[in-house]
Image (cartoon, rainbow, N blue to C red):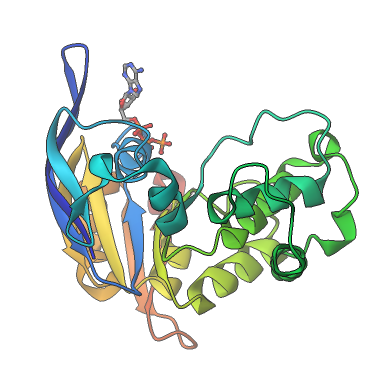
Length: 259
Ligand SMILES: Nc1ncnc2c1ncn2[C@@H]1O[C@H](COP(=O)(O)OP(=O)(O)OP(=O)(O)O)[C@@H](O)[C@H]1O
């Protein structure tokens, strides 16, 4: 349903993404992994139509995303980016209601249905108790959950998230991962926590230096050799007794030297 075809992205004379191709199947949960600066955010921005690729195409349901009307695209793809929206004087509820915009005609009032969806999405993101608070006064983790609720309220078939667990405490990290995993839609998320990526994702795409090095299931991608190649870190792998997915124990220099 989403086809990335030979994407490259250059900034001035630097090639940030290098001939990236991959297909994302409808309903799958894809984790984008890779070290700092490997191009994860840039690739997501190309996928969610924030950056126009220098070369290549992003094709969704057989249409070039840059040829889709903006409103149609917003009905198909929601985004939780790394940055919080710069918004003053809006309450949480007002902000989540903005997620309904692509479904409304210009200047149309909020319907009962819009309000019901907003309440439901606030409950799912565990922010119902913050509904009347000013967004600008919230903590980093609370803001993140509001942007997740807003994206859910958009009711799209694809949800793209850039480091969604950033800022979240452990309870809310697990809650968020459970929530997005339970959605019957396509999820593409950049994740730094490889154990979370292993536990929740169907497939992982490992980026390094702006290129896809590996694409496969967590079992295929998260091997000691591949993690060393991509992240330059030694690991000891086991199988998580609960999820039956790979569990990664990192070996820092200190522990390797037994200090
Ligand atoms: N405007 C810019 N000018 C020059 N280089 C840029 C610009 N924006 C991004 N880059 C470079 O592009 C590369 C990829 O950045 P990107 O943010 O996509 O990486 P990332 O994998 O998301 O990293 P992180 O894990 O640190 O968030 C980095 O080397 C970054 O310095």
